[in-house]
Length: 147
Image (tube, rainbow, N blue to C red):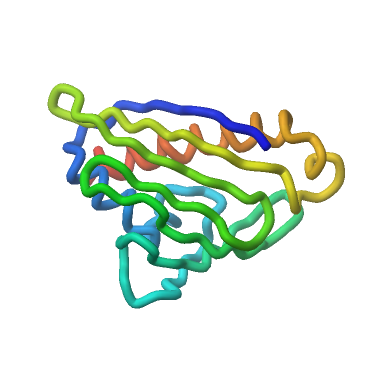
C-alpha cells in the first residue's frame, strides 16, 4: 500500500473549497478519471454518505463504492473506497491561508485491481496516482478560482 501527500493553495475561502470538495457528485468536474457519481444514500455530504463512483483506469471502466468517513465542515473531508479496484482513502484538510485556503491531501492507495504488473507494484502505482491527483487538484483550483 502506498501513501502520498499533496498541498495546493486555492484563492477561495475554506467554506467555498469545502462546498465543492465535499459534494462528491461534483467530482467529474475536477477529477479526470471520475466519469459518474451516483448517491447511494439520501444524505449528501454527511458522515456515512455512500456513493458509487464510475472511473476510467488503464484497464478500462471500473466502479467503486465510497463512504464519507470524516467530515468537519470547512476543515476536513475524507472518503474511502469500500469496494472496487485500487482501494483508496483520500483525506482532505483545509487550512485558512491569507485570503484563501491551503488544501492538503493525504492519500493511501494500492494498485490492487489494475491490469498487469501495476497491480503488484505499489510504489509505481502510488507515483502514478500521486501525479494524477496533482493534476486533479490543479483542476479543482481552476474550477474554484474561475467561478
